[in-house]
Amino acid sequence: MNRHAEIYAEAFPEIIRCSDAQDCPFFFNNGLFLLSRLVKAPGWYTERLEGALVVHAASDWAVVLPMTRDRDTFRTAVLEALLSEKPLLRVPGWIALPEAGSSRIEVRYLWPDYICRTVDMQTMAGRRLKGIRQRLNRLDRDARLEVIRLSAKHQQEAGELARLWYRQRQPVLKTMYLFEENIWLFENWSLVTSLLPGAFGIGVLLDGRLVAANLSCPLSETYWACHTERYDGEGPLYSNQLAFREACRSVDPIERPYVNDGPAEAPYRPGVDDLAAFKHRLAAFVLQPFRLLQR
Image 1 (cartoon, rainbow, N blue to C red):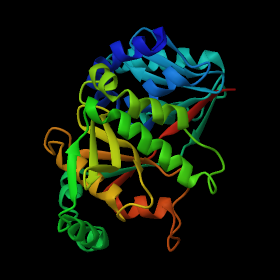
Image 2: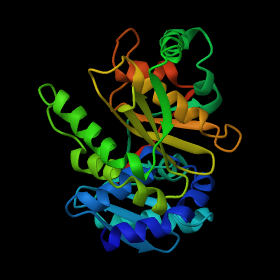
Image 3: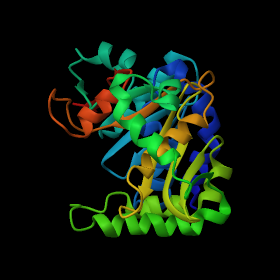
């Protein structure tokens, strides 16, 4: 841990409390993503502004996280952060759209966030989720499988599972994206949950061996995200989906009704079988975030 990761962890509860008031429960507000990058990614750092915490992705971009419910104060912080002349990612529309006509500021759409209803993901009910539901029903009947809550005693095995996931995919992956960050999260899960209130992990055991694991975290008082999943590609098919459903069943759908399934980083194209199409099929609705850049 470094000081910038500690600063973020200290601010995390207030960010969660204020995010809904600022309409910004987006993917880059994800505590698991940001904490792990602050720990492992070179050059990442934090900056405190009035009413906000800015997380800088080295010299590449930044995200402004609310620490106030007052919109005027938060808007001022966003515009001040623009003075760094790096892109601000995933800015709420109520700030971005009024600035779109400014000669000083460039506003662009970013890839969308796909939002699911927690209660729908708990049951996988309905025709559009029939295929997933049938696969999970088959796994439910497999007596060798056990779904567990991850704890300190599982973190070493979870780290080994994450490393296995990367090894199995290395021949087809262009880059080992978030390798160090994901390994750190799994291997330090007890520390992570002590720093980020509300974070939890779900695992699937096959005859006592961990074959799937996912890590979840609140984004706001109404949104949460299943941030990352890792699984043995040679284990039971769809064990990762079983872990995801259990994660959804671990969340109170009244307290946190929405699951942010994150961006697919590609536009949805009807009739094309890709990640964007899959997330679009699951989604109850889509949020469109923005990018700001000082001209």
